[in-house]
Image (tube, rainbow, N blue to C red; front, side, top):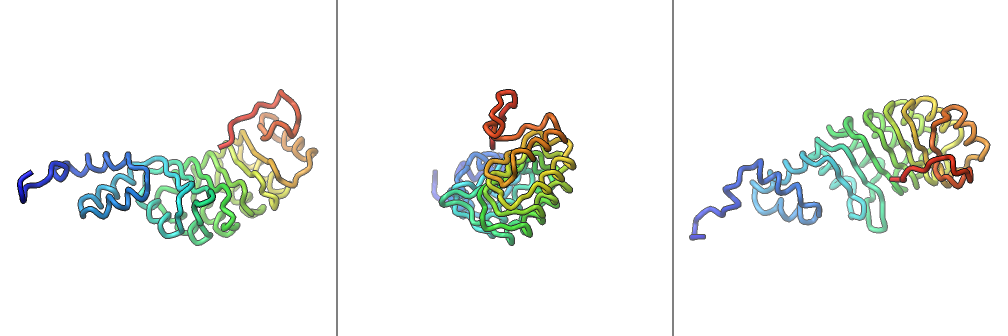
Length: 228
């Protein structure tokens, strides 16, 4: 390339540049790409809008950085902000900011697995706008019936929910959830403080309901779906 001549990649139309950047999955690489020039920054921004899946699991993300990326991803369908050893540290404030993103109303799947820094306050705010939700993983958190009531009231299309280890959710919350979510097929209750007899009550309300784990019943007739 001669001095002063435009690089080949600079000649690419923005639409094609954004398509290329969609294949960058490392957030650190995306940040570096965005800092190259104004055109690339816009390309990264547009590429976020084309993503249908976004996972922050395993990344050191805070409220501000997570919400900024999610706001750009207006076509998002699946959002995973699960906590790992070095992962997301989202708070109620972060969930409140996420609830204002355009994509939230169209999300079909959300995972808040292990997010111990969140409470009912943040979860209720987020769920109140997630009306298209079909799959929810909120296991390993300290939510109570308040969050479960919000899920039941705002997620009519819910098909599966993971409540693994949610020890503050009571029988009352589960009954409301099963009664108000007509499409609910699978519920994970491992580690919850609910008696075995009560789980049989849930099956009375919804005979086709698949309660995970199967070992609770020690019956091979109850199918086990993968836990997401």
